[in-house]
Image (cartoon, rainbow, N blue to C red; front, side):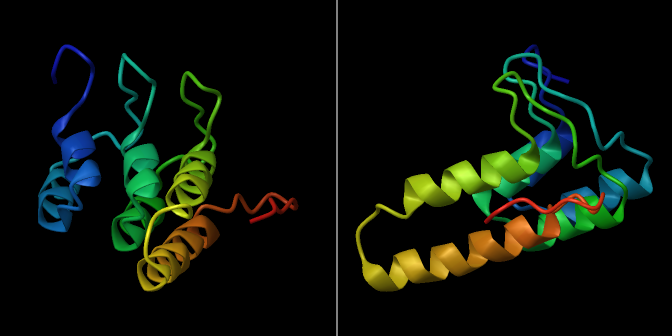
Length: 119
C-alpha cells in the first residue's frame, strides 16, 4: 500500500487491468479499501474511468456500492460526474461512444434497495 492508501487493486481498477484484479481477488484482496487522500475505492476509480467490465467484476465480487468518498460521492456519483464532464469534449462520435460506455457503467452501479437514481 502506498502512502496515499492506494493498493494494487486501486491501480488495477484505474488502469482496467482485469488480469491483475483476477489474481488479487483469487488471493483474497479486500475490495472496499479507501484511499487516504480522497476516500476512493477501486469501484470509484473503475466507475470514474468507465471501465464497465471491471466495475461488473467488482460488483459481482461483492464490492460495496454505497461507500462514499471525501466528496460524499458513491461510485455511481463518480461515474455520473465523469460522464457529464466528458460529454463536453470534442468529436460527436467519441462523445457518443463514451456516453454509452458510461451509461452502461451507471446501470451496473444502481443500488437495488427500492430506489432508483436518475441517470
